[in-house]
Image 1 (tube, rainbow, N blue to C red):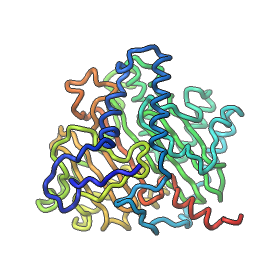
Image 2: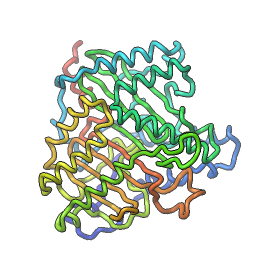
Image 3: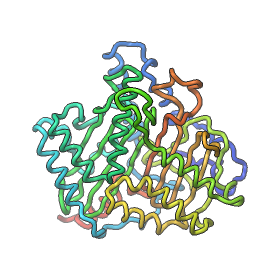
Image 4: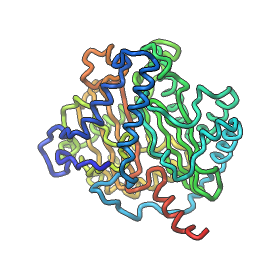
Length: 418
């Protein structure tokens, strides 16, 4: 799915207008937010399920219409950023945990969970709660199977990443309580699929897919790619219910603003793409694998060393959700491209503002967005305006390596006759 580059976000454009809403950006930013509210479907549960199934099929058909290319700045993949090599960080714990999880499943569950390494299932993820998912859900697992599933996440993620994932699941239970919808929302409606067979040498991976958290985890030898990665919630803080007090993404929110405030008078105007934040702005969510997104904002090449360190620390908040060793490897990859890294901002700059920010280089794309109310629209003062109680974050690996696809391509090339 190719998207036209937004002329209002170019580096040299000092007229900071709102990004132009094409049919595609309207479809991707406004329409999903509107259709999420359960009261949008005054019909039976069976009727709603069928409507959701049809919507899922429609999104998939449109989203997978083009072969995978990857996120690019101008429609052309820049080659040479990723190569097969040894990281020195073992993936054995992840492999062992995956094997333990698969062994815990019944044959029927395993048959529904396992896919080929190059199956389109990789690309079939979506944040929205209505999406019809594959694999086996936590709701359908026994306690011992569920423990094995969490064991896989524990081996793959840092302690911070595991806590974030669990807290998103808990907040989805809070959302179910607030909306009285325990059929399409809840703590355990998260699905795992495994692509390929866990191996020390051959490519494989897994996906966690559910409302407000998606983890794609590709493994080749001792290399890991953990994108696309999606984290979010509505609400982001539980003020009632079973998980009262759970709160997420506050560091990502506040330190993003700190980064903007650290810019000087020359950098600030370049970073601000638009002062008005009245819509949803994330561009690289579900089925946007081939989004064309030009670099925009303030260039880190013009930052002081302390500013560059601050930006890298902000990146690490996201990258650091993967296991610590591979997060260090990934951060080294990001640091090598610091001169080609951009920081862009849409929205206000005070402690109560809503905003969007983007960090973008040839090897990483991070988006943070305060979103319009969706499932909780009925409780909002103004359901048309973004709120700090609904956040979406997405992380991508541009230039063809989301889902580890560039590494997989190179692996196929070197094993063409095996």
